[in-house]
Structures are given as structure tokens and as C-alpha cells.
Image (tube, rainbow, N blue to C red; front, side, top):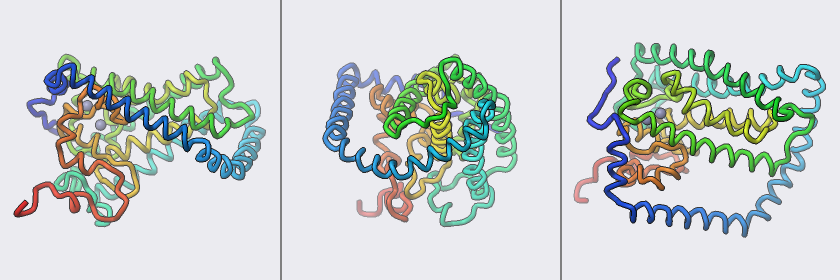
Length: 340
Ligand SMILES: [Zn+2]
Ligand SMILES: [Zn+2]
């Protein structure tokens, strides 16, 4: 179980180096670019948002009643046992989402089959098949984090949310409000994950807390929560759980967000760049190189220039939604073809 510790695995120091090399103009340039991108996005949404949301709302109008009726039935069935309803939504559903997705991925990782999945492997020579001893050790840690840390943190979240409001109220949130909340949760997660993650890369903390997560230079799905308990609290769970607590969300939105966050982190660790799923290249590169790509969305990495090396790589060229069935390391191969 040797951790492949490279020259630069303790940090940030090198990542920060690349940003200081760019100097303040580099950072200013990044801020200008980010403002331009975000500004254009806002203008676009302002221009097309109304018609876009009208269409969504129209679809929701038909299905919205369906969900509200379903919720009302559940609500009446569980009346007086709101905590049970809350835990079904925030524990059982996320458990199915996380372990269901990972069970499928583990079948592929351990058997090396089917080839129509394994052909999308990002680090081609790695985990083919995965080392069973290393996997068993990771699973023990992941189960511990799941049962002994995530579980109790959801209980704490329930008490905080009940104290602030009524997470299991009889009315589902509106479609617009649920979307707004999900956007806020994603921003909160990006901020908290990026900065706590960079902190864990500080040389004085790295070897005690974060090195464990980086034992996997080529990650697999469950490595998403293979981490030291302190890291699992501060970087994995808190950034996800805090959003719904701050907004006093309904259990339905909280549940959807937990499931989305868990599937998203599983995909970004899974090691396969599969068609029609978000690109995992960004975080896979973080595991490969240690000192680049600390965030989830990549916005803060752009602002702090902690993605400068990444943006010069093949992995960056491949970092997009794959919309056909040709693996990206075939359409964008590692080494240039002869004569190029
Ligand atoms: Zn990771
Ligand atoms: Zn890291």
C-alpha cells in the first residue's frame, strides 16, 4: 500500500508557485475573464431565461402535481414521524444513489469488463483490474466514513434544520425555488471545498490528513470518500450539508442535492470518461499531479491560477462532455501522430 508520493505531492506550494509566477496581472486577467464569462452567462439567461423557464415550468406544471400528490400521501402516512420522513430522504435515497452507482463501477473495476466501459478509462494502464488488497482497505475506510461520520452529520443537520424551520412541511418548494437553491448549494460547495482542500495541501497538514486520499493516483468511484475522518468532515460532508441548513430547505431539495453531490463526486473519481456524463478529467488530473485543480466546478481554480498547468495538457483538451461513443484518448491521443 505504497502511496506514490512525488516531488510535489505536498502542495499547493507548487500550485501557488504557478500563480505567483503569473503575478498580479495574471490574477487580474483571470478575474476579468471570469467576470466576462459569468457576465455573458447572466446576459444570456436574462435574454432567454424567461422563455426557457416557461417551458420548464410548463413541463413541471404537469408533473408538479404528480410530485405534490405523492408527497402529500407520504406526508399523511408519516404524520407525527417527521424525523423518519427526513431520514428516508437524506439517508436512504443518497445511500441507494451512492452505493448503487459504486456497485456497478466496482463490478467493472474488479472484473475489467465489459470493454465498452473500460475503453473509456482515463489512465489507460491503471486499475486494470484494481488491486484487491488496496480496494479492501479503501472499502473499510469508506464504510467507516459513511456510517460513523456522514450518518451522524445528517442527524445534526436534521436538528439544525428543524430548529430553523420545517424541513418536512406539507408543501413542496416551487420549481424555480428548488433550482435557485441547487445553484446556491453548488456555489457554497465550490467555495468550501476549494479552500478546505487547498488548506489540506499545506505541507504542515498534508501528510497527516490528505495524503491518504492521494494514495490513489488513479482514483475509482468509492475513493470519493476514501479520506481521513477530519478531511471527510471538513471537505466532503460539510460543504454539501451546510447549504440546505443555511437556506432552511425542504427535505425534497436536500435529498435531491445530496444524491446529486454524491453521484457527481463518484463520477469525478470513477476513472472513466464516459459519454453523456460530466467530464471527470479535472479531478482525475488532481489525483495524478497533486498540485492542480483543487475545486469542483473549476471557477476558483481559474481565479487563483491553480489550473494553469492543466490547461496546457491533453487532459484539458479532453475535458468536455463526450457526445459520441469514441473514447477521448483515441480521438485526442496522448502522443502526437507521426509527422505532426
Ligand atoms: Zn479526490
Ligand atoms: Zn488533494
